[in-house]
Image (cartoon, rainbow, N blue to C red; front, side):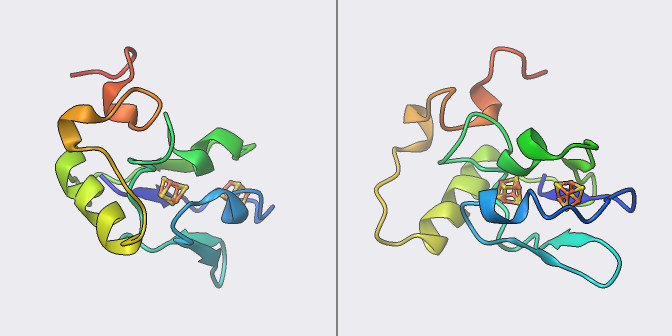
Length: 105
Ligand code: SF4
Ligand code: SF4
């Protein structure tokens, strides 16, 4: 599931520099996330970095973009060909929110 920003965004800009994939930009009314660049921070962080900093909690999973951890890691590889990512089975909780103990199965 790519992350998306809802219309309650207050345009503070805090999320934009936190994205490891430069997926976030200023839109017409709110900041927006390009789903083709979002990896839900898989390969980088234990949770979605935008979600972690958003003061009004509007960076949320987008139900219209449901994706597997494997697909998100593959996207991270495509976006960062020079970076060494572990195999999907080697992802740790620090590198994938799918591995978080709190993640609902
Ligand atoms: S979830 Fe991560 S990769 Fe996706 S937009 Fe937010 S910071 Fe960027
Ligand atoms: S951090 Fe939240 S409120 Fe601020 S621009 Fe990003 S989505 Fe909008």
